Structures are given as C-alpha cells and as structure tokens.
Image 1: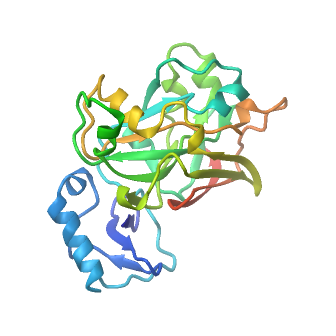
Image 2: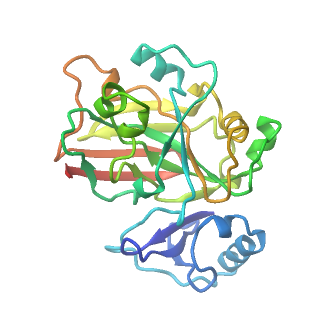
Length: 285
C-alpha cells in the first residue's frame, strides 16, 4: 500500500494512493498514519480490506498539499557515509561500522514544502536518501534478515545538510543537520511488501533541472537489514521511528571548486524508484 497524509500543515488527514493512482480518503477507517497504526496489524488489514472492496471515497487531489506520510515520529536516526561511491567522492575511508547521527523529528516537512537556507549558510547541500520506517519494536535484533521483519515500509527522504555547520564549526555533525525544514519526507509511505528488494532501488536528484545524483541502493556499504540490526544494539527502535540510510555520490561537497551549494531560488527534485518524487523550492530563512 501507498499511505500518505494530505492537507494543511498540522492538520493532515490519512489517505491512500490506489493502484490506479486515485487518491482515497482513509479518515473513516483510521485516525492517522503513525507508529500506533503501523504496529496494529488489524488496523492495517482494515485499510487493505476497505481498499480492495472499493469502499474508500476518492479525494480531489487538485491543489491538495501532501504532508509527511508519518505523524508523531519518535526519532530520526541517520547513517552517514553509507555508499561506496559517496565515500570515494568525498575522499573518506569507508567506515568499519555505521556512522550514526540524529535529526530532530521537527525537521521533517512535506515532500513539496519550502526548504529554508539557514541564516549565515554558505554550504547548504542536498542528499537523496532511502528512509526506513519502523513498524515493530527492534531491540537487540540478532540478524540482518530478522531486522527486515521490523520494517513497516519505505519513503523518500531529503537529508538537507549545511556542510560548514556540520564539519567546520566543531563538535558533532548535528549542527549541520538539524536546521529548520531539513528533512522533507514522502510523498508516500510504501509498505514493505511492495518493495521486493530494498538493495535494488534507483535514487535520483536534480538541481534546477540538472541531474546531480544518479545512484542505486546496491552501493550501500551497510544494507538496510544490517543498518536496522546494528542500530538496535545501541538504542531501541519503536514503531514510527525513521532511519535515513545515507546518500549516493553526487552531492555538492564532492564536486570540484567552486562547489555548487544551494541558494535561495534553487529548485531541487528527487525520487526513488517506486517510492515517489519530491520537489522543493529553497528560500532564505
């Protein structure tokens, strides 16, 4: 299923995109799309049954804002330097273990919402990423294969980053990752049963119409199952938590000088095979 949330920011309602591309109203079946829903097999089955029976009313998508596909996110765990080609372009050694940092849940915005270039920023960068949404509590998971059983679904994430804040201002990466609007998510939460192999997905990103990133999750150093297993050794993952699993080559930081960092007025578009497409206009904060 392709689950999403539509409406004005803070007042989104649950919806489903059916096999014919028609937007369907879920508000009569479930109150929202969040961790509680993803952990409730009976509620998910109600959605599936109603959709199969043609009982969900159609919504007019004209002019309707698409919000983040997940409400009440617990935490956003991010994996850095998780693609072989991205490590090469930045001159970094592939890590021996996953690099973990966090984004606050309040950085998450809709897939087509405005993104703000932080005040004082000189190095705002783009990163298309596969987001993993947890549907079953993961604590000390024993194997990568078992870890996949804790995944509710997948989504497109844009891990917007300010490289000077991240790398040159001391401390951890978090300063360059947690600026307002720095994690567009969606448009859909695609349930795991629709993704045959999370290690066989193409990722693309364009800036002002120019293709910048053109990669595949096959390049991940630590695949999805291993990421979930590994993270569960250090923290408990709950339904409604999100893991951003890293970005392929093609970011501004890896380009020759002068590096083409983002400025107000730029437009970024990104997509992952089967998971939908995002579009953001950038403006000054």
